Length: 466
Ligand code: MCA
Ligand code: AMP
Image (tube, rainbow, N blue to C red):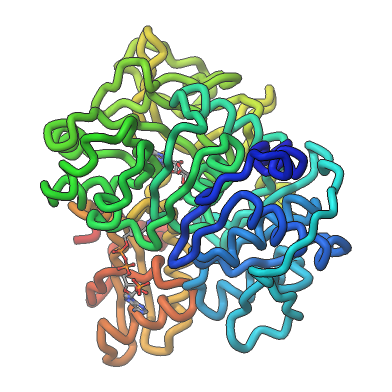
């Protein structure tokens, strides 16, 4: 079973857990989840694909578990999605209805989630190859693409982490990450439901909430860890934890060191992508090396290739494009055959787009991305192209170039260089992106210029922007 701890027979026979999931003001026992999610499953069993507005609530958890019970594909939608991003996700995914809450103005039907409804019908486990999620993720250009993740991939990806992190039912997982990405949703909600360990979702990932939760296993993106490292009282409250895990973006070495000092724990760093789940990690019982993301998890193989496709030695120094094979990889981009084919080599390796070095012990260091047009800000992946297209839709903007600049808090911050046709405030342009795409993709800064540096072909030379 994908969610082993929710086996209805065991739950009925004494394997209940009163606080299986705490989220917002709600506490769900294992039998609450099985009963209410099965009732959701009954309501949507005949649908193929539904959208869930993925706020961190009990409703979202029950909607998603209900779909997994019924074998219905879920499209988790960022709750801060703006109008054009929302329209794109709904059209591209072919979602037939909203399950649970719907954003205002949406024309799709809404199927309610009733937190107190119960059903004890037992569904057969859906086929392992069926698509559990379509997760939308940004590319360098164009609107986000739908990553198809099967149940088989999710099970393999979670089992590899359960092993790497010695994750057991005795753990209490704490995090406050969004529920529309692999990190917060698949690792952070399905993980504990597979293992049988309680989850405390803190709503937002603040140092105070992490300190108060008293868990054993903590997940965070580097921005979350860096804020905790800046709050010694909160950090020292994590001393009793078993494992602090960082991922989704590079954990700066000074943050690693400061966390070790304040919490007594060297954080476990792991590397992944929406397309691959988590493929590299340091281990609960192994070396944790600042600046390095560890070794391949169970079932994963990696290699480095240069621009000509030739092998790059694993000497810890030489860098190359990181390519990956493993059982937790996605099944392609929804409706994008060409993009899917392009992301694989002819001999069957997935091209991550990241540049890495690998040492003789198979330890991996992520050096950066091949394209500067994919920005990581606060752990969110943001395509420069989609922000540029959004800004060009504003009547005052004549030209634009979007880049990710180093930021002590967010890792990178989205900065838009613009040439204007008419005067407009910085705030108006930022809000224009926040309401069209989504709040977390908004530029944090707008820099107005007379012109943008271009080469002879007319292409903006982003390296010359200042
Ligand atoms: C600000 N706000 C606005 C605007 N400006 N609202 C409307 N219009 C505006 N112009 C509001 C926001 O709605 C929000 O309100 C508040 O201001 C703060 O927002 P923001 O500044 O964006 O928050 P932040 O402090 O910058 O967020 C930092 C964060 C966040 C909490 C670390 O970036 C985060 O949750 N990151 C996690 C990303 C993640 O999980 N990535 C995983 C993908 P309010 O607070 O009321 O809502 S990677 C993955 O899955 C792979 C597999 C992997 O490796 O893990
Ligand atoms: P996403 O699809 O949003 O999960 O973003 C995946 C990208 O996040 C990867 O291709 C990397 O560029 C980056 N990433 C994830 N984890 C790490 C990490 N531990 N260190 C460096 N980069 C990371």
